[in-house]
Length: 117
Length: 114
Image (tube, each protein chain N blue to C red):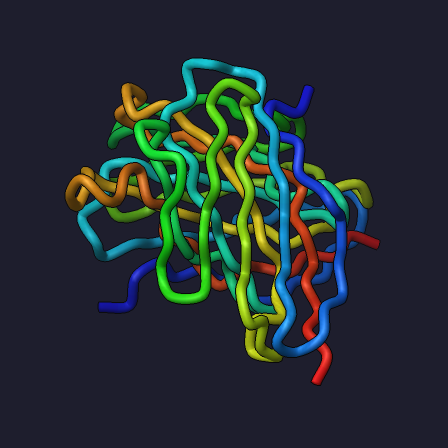
């Protein structure tokens, strides 16, 4: 199993350009998430999808849109990129508890490093 | 408003020493407290987690201490090794949230010197 995969790994955009970050998971998880990671800010939730067909805003949704294409795939779109969106973006997924010891474990992809000039 | 506050931002420890990272939370509805470990260039991965019905959980050299009345929990890394050099995030969630949303702390960069 590949777990959570993200494409691309790196991307450089100019201000105003658009792009879509792709994420897929093969663990049959219901929930998927998009985070951004910035120095000193930790992981901040952009959007999440509790289940196929639903999406909700997280802490920092402005400037982003998402699509839960099916149970496996959850994409993040930047319609008009800004330098403030320079960050590392992580996709994660989670499924039902695997037992008493672990609840709500989130599995993360390898990240996309995005630079907006 | 950060619901989980983590300190210190960074720490340097010698090989064999103890690393201690502290977190505090506000929401008393939180009932699941995991720690994630992230190596450079990788995504975070679950390291260890605790429920508030116990005050301590140990897995190998990693121990979580939990103080429910103070709304604080901490990660202790005993006999720290250079391979433990990573960024550590504490987090909190409510297990009643079936979608598993986590509130993360800001992270602590740990450097273990040889």
